[in-house]
Image (cartoon, rainbow, N blue to C red):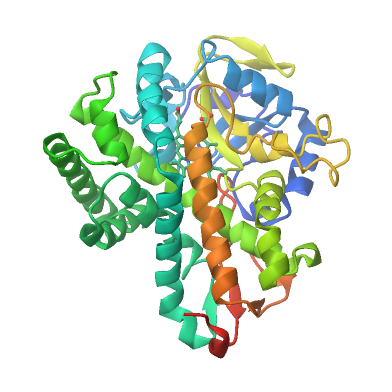
Length: 411
Ligand code: HEM
């Protein structure tokens, strides 16, 4: 499909491809180069050479997410839909769905408030205990082997079962739901069928909680004064499971990498445990799991960072680039103790505060349990041989191969 504008795109020559192997490099270098060449707002090409803007400056990202009346969230505003084939790889993230994430204005506020309230009431002690239990069970599956890949065998497996329990999926059904959700992320025809089955399971969960409420997020959404329809709750729970899985798994993996490769976090039972919080925080500055987030859509023609943005243009939030912006981090080494990173975004569509806390509890528990159970864990490859998945949107490792003494496993 062709875009009538593409032949007269004045930026055609200078657009930076937002795909390819460069995303397997060190983030800071990549974004510094882009900032030098293009300033705080860069013209980019998404997969399939679809044009968009990447907002690289911290202040510019903050401006975009703080002004929802001019930077909309509903992707049906996009002016490039005529170029998008049905199998476009970014469609699952950008294609409109009737979830709170694509809602705007009063409708978004109503659903976001209900979700915030329902998540804020999650019992943090019970959540931590559940995360520890999931982590323990995963370690049981490889503890005797003396070696493992901490990404596919561990980090990837922690968040979803915990989120499923949190929304009220019964223990006996969790494994099946997790299997089906994982199939929805795999490529191919099976993904659509799996999505239909997951949707049906969540719809039935909502129905059953209406009959028999319990102490879980679904029951709290049903009882909320916002009077959400079952359909809305189903959509938002589906979104919650997706939003919770990938970034949290990558946060766990990226933090384990830091702790295993950097002497400051010498991963020992006593030293490592003390610095888990510090390592989690540093990862959000240096290797945030959500590096480029799509995004916002210009509600009208406007200027941003000296660029002419047209109505309906897509702006990708350059969260990793913003975290490395020298204007807010003149000394990259000393400014990572605070929590002013953009990793959870900002403004009314930011990751809900309660969800941020939940993600932290899950990630912290996963790392602490691993340190307790495998106190002499070490990498089996040199640090510079580790590779990042080639995604321009999320930053996570392909593998984190380790070994440990099976005899030292603490059961
Ligand atoms: C259990 C874990 C998590 C849950 C339940 C969760 C939930 C959500 C939800 C519901 C939204 C949509 C908010 C809205 O549109 O109003 C969201 C957005 C987002 N979340 Fe999370 N999240 C989790 C973990 C994370 C992690 C670990 C990160 C990154 C480190 C992250 C980064 C983001 C970002 C960047 C957005 C988009 C914000 C925007 O559009 O401005 N989330 N999350």
